[in-house]
Image 1 (tube, rainbow, N blue to C red):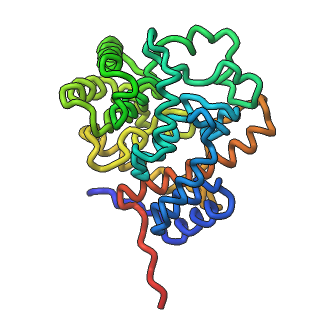
Image 2 (image 1 turned 60 degrees about the vertical axis):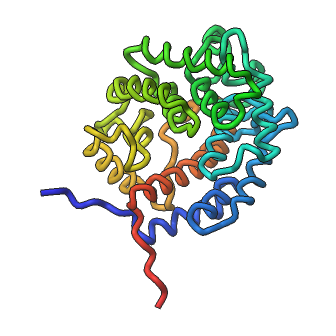
Image 3 (image 1 turned 135 degrees about the vertical axis):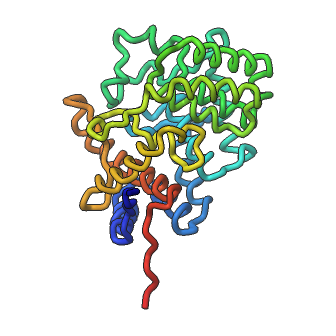
Length: 316
């Protein structure tokens, strides 16, 4: 007998909406209104612009675990995720300015973007962004964020970088994927975002898809007991029903959808499963509040994609 699906109730949805509209950042509020209440995408632009610097890059804790005001490849890639979700055109001046930042900060010898600034230790941040003793890792080629940013480049600004550079980038990403037997979860997420790029050449898309299909099953945590901690859940990879990675993971996805609905807190939110430990405790409280807004919006979007939100009954 097929298990009955769970749905986020109308009351539970209203609780989440109330939290977002009263406690989340104005950016998440504008995004929620645009996706769920026909709010203007222009309000999303206005709020996103508050995180952009004069150099075109994004900072100011757009990624809440990184509290530095200065621009970073990390925060700039998050900005482009939001632009893609809300279909903000590449021709817009502030988008072009962000692309210019990426062109200016590319290490053209290593074909790599350093994910965070070298001076990050001067500001509150998560412990995994500590610099001491990790310079070599931060300065070496990594799929995170380079694969994701390659997708940004392909979606409208190849000429800003040069076609030879872009071609070499694609070869480097493919070679890296072909050479690994296991992939770190954040590297995988960046490659998935590259795969969603509209202008990815079909031959390249096929090779990346083939490599990721080989790697995905070894990266996803399918046991609900693991989901209490920090891990890659099925819905982080398969966030739409038409995902090319759905085959063989249908049961895990259905179980994950039920789990997310069950895990919503009494105040309507979903909170981070990680913390900063004893590092910058006061700043972590602010980051945790921001993450709660980000994650609550993300859960609602995913549940919407899978039609797991119960309709709100019309007023009598």
